[in-house]
Amino acid sequence: MARTIIFSDSVYTDDVNDPALNKKIIDYLENEKKISLGNTLSNCGGYQTKPVKDETIIKPIFKMAVNLINKDFNRPHVHTDSNLSGVYFVKTHNECGNLVFDRNDISMEFTNNELHYKDTDSWSSYSIVPKDGLLIIFASNMKHFVEPNLTQQSRVSVAFNIRIENGEES
Ligand SMILES: [Fe+2]
Image (cartoon, rainbow, N blue to C red):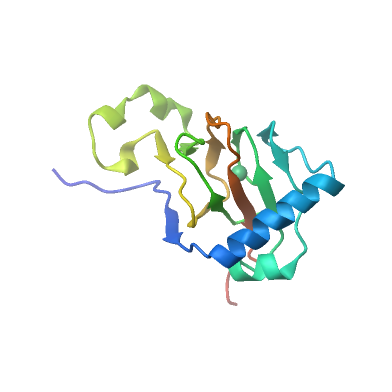
């Protein structure tokens, strides 16, 4: 029987681990915690900085504003006014909370396809275990959340959005 893949989404990952950059991010985070109350967006607990303007942090990852996030968990959400979104994990631990993508079509949750098919394209959710240096990029409309951090240690990550200003050539 022929199979045609439709409505697929993709997640891009890469190992970027840069110890010098990671130290700079953690130092920045620790300093911000001393001088600012930070932001509360989708994060529940933990601490999230206001958008970062420090180019020595932004440029090595992408040329855009980023948030430093050190949090307990995130509610399901999408990133508005953005085309691609991403997260770079700086400091992680076992059971510090997976990044989970859910299909926007919630009726897929009733199929239990994960139990029957190895092909992730038919699953209703897809989970990524964080690890130090892991970079993940995904379409901003993909619903996602971060599971609770079950450890007593902080998880440090950088979240960012990419808005394509000129996506098509005329
Ligand atoms: Fe997010």
